[in-house]
Length: 176
Image (cartoon, rainbow, N blue to C red; front, side, top):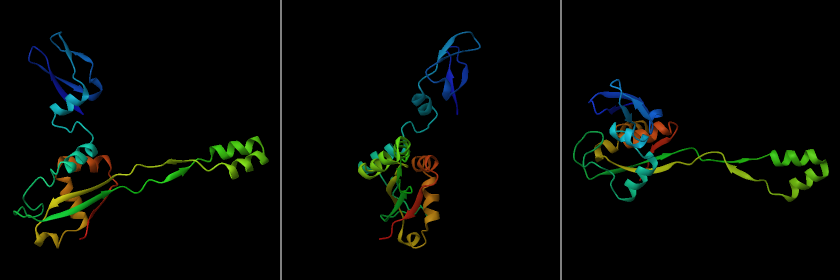
């Protein structure tokens, strides 16, 4: 992503995120300090914290839904529909390295190691799960399908950033 920083001479200098925190030279000869990446992002109107943390905070503060109108037809409605976003569950991956190493030492010690030592596990994924409220009038609610839910979420910067970060999230409407 390209960002603009400004020199004292009023020129704009194009920098990248890799330049954050460094200095660049302006064509006028002056040195221009490039702000940290979070400030560059903020100056470009980008989200500066992870979308997950921002969404969790907004949900905890009751800031969602953030509109009084139906997300489908734009009519005022008090109606709310819940949309669930979730990743496929992470699974614990087996670590066969220890068992294989035990077998190298010897058959007996390898078998003993497998019998007496529980198999260690490590997470092989990261769980993402959110339940997001959206405004939806009764008429549109009857026609709301999971693909439309993803479309609606894409219209909002925060949920779009979440879907960009986790493109394989399962998006579905929660039935009453």
